[in-house]
Length: 176
Image (tube, rainbow, N blue to C red; front, top):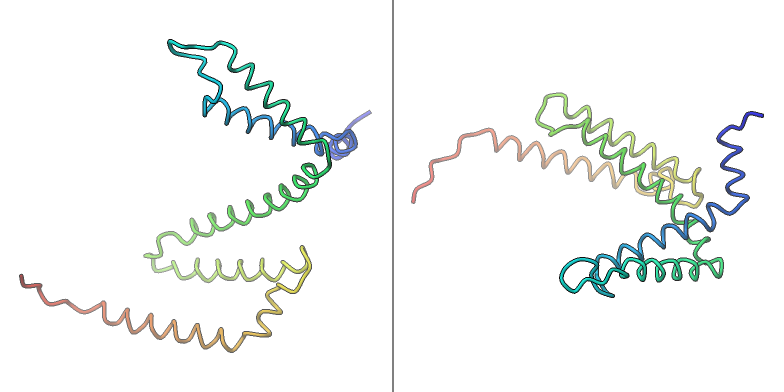
């Protein structure tokens, strides 16, 4: 019998790995790290060393991790939080890639990257309604504010060309 990854993940979900085991491990790790870093119950090194500190911290972290799973608030919170965090992380990575593509903006073709970047952001925004529902889609926004955006872009372009034209000239020497 050959198992594929979908079957394995579905079996893990049915067994509660994602609802209980992973939230427990995350809570345990965070609480244990905080207790170790703050040295609330002493330090395991140094002259006044207490060799049982790591064990005490582990018992407290396990207890807090298990107690947090008594009701379904923590698993529900994690089930909502981490998928949205994954989406936000992928949006952040796309923005980093776009910034890398645009570069420092000093090249002659830098404007192409900015146009493509804005286009990708507008496309992603238009897909928002399909993914999450609601009326936050770009098409609704564009219907309502199209001419205001055109005016804003025109004014920004005019200001850019006026400022750029002034910066090309020589500046007089500064006297002290």
